[in-house]
Length: 217
Image (cartoon, rainbow, N blue to C red; front, side, top):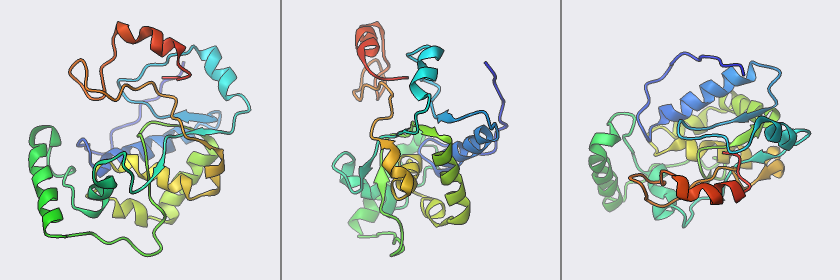
């Protein structure tokens, strides 16, 4: 196993744009290794369910991308996700883990005053989904090129909420790479509040369900 340390470049507040910028920064570092054909974005809570041989066999000659997505607005998110995009969310400025209620109040005030941030008419169709994905090299290289050649979307997502749950889905699903997207990120996640966390912190009661799933992490 080869491990590479990537130096910290951004200060990250939960929910802020710098989280997305960190992911893009890490993606570029991973792509510098020409031997890598598939890139997996995981969190510090994630752990591989399958062994290395399974991973190698699964992704051998596999050009698919594994990314959860849905069109926005969507019933999956409160207010269809509009609050994330059309109102000012101050997560990069305020530590949401301490003062999130004030961010909520500010967004609620904007909603009551009918304040809506505009999108350019030629902005891409917006998609959302989970943060975590497994992408092939060609697709991730496209995302990085798009970010450099067409910076509007990244800049526009400043003061949005959890932009990393919008950016990759939007860029990829508006491209030719969408035809290779499987709407499944292959992560076993229990989207219930349990064991003091949302999504749930898993425990031994989840063991059989995890092993019988088709998930990778």
